[in-house]
Amino acid sequence: MLTSAERQAQIRSALADNNAPITATQFGQRFGVSRQTVVGDIALMRARGEGIIATPQGYQYEEKSRHEAVIVCRHTPEQAREEMNTVVDLGGTMIDVLVEHPVYGQMRGQLQVKTRTDVNLFMGHLRQREGHLLSELTDGVHLHTIGYDTPEQLTAIKDALRAKGFLFEEVG
Image 1 (tube, rainbow, N blue to C red):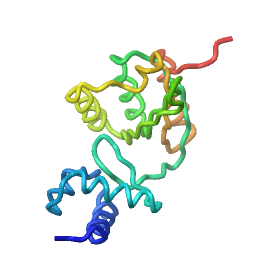
Image 2 (image 1 turned 180 degrees about the vertical axis):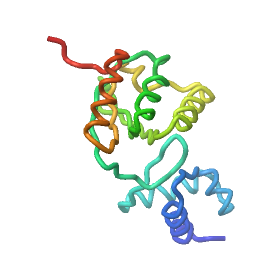
Image 3 (image 1 turned 90 degrees about the vertical axis):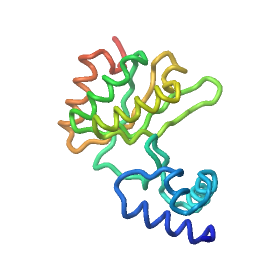
Image 4 (image 1 turned 60 degrees about the vertical axis):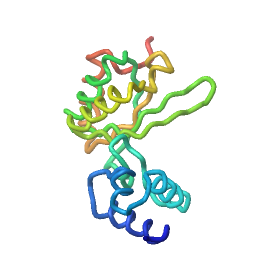
């Protein structure tokens, strides 16, 4: 059986060598330990400064986008798939979602949604687990960090979200 340090070294190596996220369950099966043991190993690694993030698809190293911008959106839960598809269809990455909760303050969820397949996986997980969007806590208002390549791409993403009524902007 591997020690915690040996597991962590193998986790580090697997995440560095793999572009796709890896779940704690997959790591647990690989190492013959529980999912929770892996979660603990990763928590220790993150506490030491490893740039590991938890996405709906599993763990991965945080990718730095070429450029990032924060946008404010508002829509119903039923419109979430359309919002995400709009961003990824224009080549953007939906990095995260953030809401300002009246009790807890800022609440952030990692998304790392880059393709329609990612959108479908996220929405499938949400439905399967009978989960709720963070934006449901704030009457649909939420922020996204968007990764993009060029200023023109960000403009196209904002224009498309605006045209669909999803971009939340000051009026006046």
